[in-house]
Image (cartoon, rainbow, N blue to C red):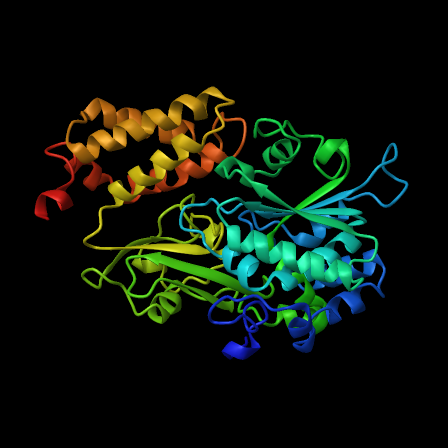
Length: 425
């Protein structure tokens, strides 16, 4: 268990307060690219072994162990036919409540690039693509400049790397939909198998990792896996870039040991705003189920949050105080997910707009008891074991299903005159 001072935080300790990115010379003066130099002296298998020993889980939402994903990539000569292998760094950050990758792209582009070089070496990738949502213009500019500096200095070796601005769709968070979009197609998830490591971008072996995951890789190498793992307060290694928004006095990003509690994060944000009393919070962004005050001391990592009945997701908390309406919060989420559905399968294409209309009617006071029964049915059918083609609907249903279970009486209260909180305002 480790307490970290701000200047020793691996991910953000070198970031400037104004997010101004470092030049290559400035970054190297801070120790930049030493991790790349050390990693390239190791075999790919040795790098993967260090990442495995560090217990680095992916930070994009699913929490899949990074090393295990990397081991799926074939070695040179093992994949059918000739052609490149790809590493895709996903910076298309669209999750409601998530705003962590933006900081890393804008303020610390050379850190992202270092991680990409090391990950490409470990996965035998010959080409890397950093996909960034188009509205993150400062992040795009910072990454392109960092890549050019590193290329000119000869730090990329034989790796080809470029930035790809994305039009931005939530479905692109699903890795096969991301691959389809990169190929110029409609962003629709693919049937699996084959998995991307066997047939990904242009049919070639491909690994997709989140920006935060990639940014942590250099620190595994420089610190060593044991020290990196020891930064955590649980058995999931390293630090986490937590985001806290909603009803707190100072919404912000906080890098802290994996397993930090919601109580500590909220206190570091000045406490709960509104009436100062916590009603509920989503532990990992808008696609995660609600937890309550009884979970304030729960270690926030993938395993502990799953056991509590929610998902850790992106690790970006959304906090509601007692004056906030959880039904209104879910209604806003559902409008987003209904808009962002790729439309490929019927449950998602039809179910999400249906749920959104019912929630809006509840807020307005025009819903009936039959509508509420239909909402419960949609939540049950569309949950994790639902019939949708991919996980988007399951994620969209998580806050709705948990709100129905936790705040059923509030849903009932909306049937007579709409939102009680709005009537009191």
